[in-house]
Amino acid sequence: MRYIEPHAHMVSRTTDDYQAMTMAGCQAVSEPAFWAGFDRSSVQGFYDYFCQLTQHEPRRASMFGLPHYTWLCINPKESEDLKLADEVLDIIPEFMGSPNVLGIGEIGLNKNSRNEMVVLEKHIDLAASNGQLILVHTPHLEDKCKGTRLILDVLKSDNRIKPERCIIDHVEEHTVGMVLDEGFWAGMTLYPETKCTSNRAIDILELYGSERIWMNSACDWGISVPLAVPRAVQEMKRRGSDTGQIDKVVYQNPIEFMSQSPRFIAPEGQ
Amino acid sequence: MADLKKILDLYFLDARARLIDIAAFMDRVDRSDDGDDFRYDAFCAALKALENGKPDRAGKVLLAFSDPTDEPIPVATTKAACGAWPGADNA
Image (cartoon, rainbow over all chains, first blue to last red; front, side, top):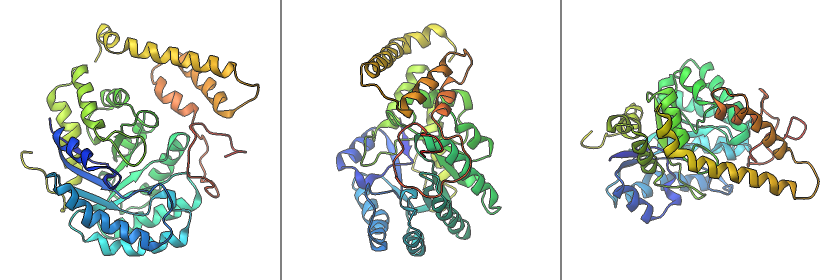
């Protein structure tokens, strides 16, 4: 089995996780910028984080033969401070030329506040102005449905944005339809409690098909499972999915989306 | 996958265990001190989505916990989500 992990916060993970992912068939990993679990105190903290994402982490992943890609932004959890957000947005272009940067992400909303909306619009403008792909975080739990609607409205209102160049992540049963219907890509995050379980993600695939959709672990510093994707593959096999269907969702689809960036190099043996 | 027997062979025991867990959770709440909590109210409302016999129960349960409003909130006073919408007066 081969797969691509399209959403993992590897800076929070151990080398054991890299080894396990590689042994499970992972061919490449993509790491969106994220909240550290605490608020960074200044733009310098983001500068160091972007250096980590573009320089150190690719080297660490390469020790396990794993190509590492990344996305840049200030996470919506830190978007309430507009001054800090502007300072971070100002330094992102300096890193956009790094060879492992695929686009802007994970941008989006957290609590669906006015300031979060302002910062989301600025990120979208940055991506559109620089021809970057977009990876979107949708809010958690009770805030997800409303936030997804707001995010789609903002993206659709900018005529420079092509839906096929945006992935809307963390969809669940109540949001996947609106995302796919508008032509965007959809990501399903496999979490034991707060997002999709493997079984529910496979249900969604049965209901909505396997076009413009992928699965990810979104493993980070919290409760999350770096091998969630290969575990879901095992469940797909138990249900009777054929190897072609599985390969499309966990390998070919991430390649199809990320190959829209010239920086993404499809793994050998595609 | 449309084979009923296969679905039940794969998932009946798991679903049964989860259902008993829900029943035990509700019993636990009943044994607690008196008082209201919007999260449990939302939980009981979401259970009704299971009763209508129509498809998309999962989506309807998720919607029962969701903020139904359309406008951005003035300011985010917390980063966390609790799993149920507390209502416009408490959001």
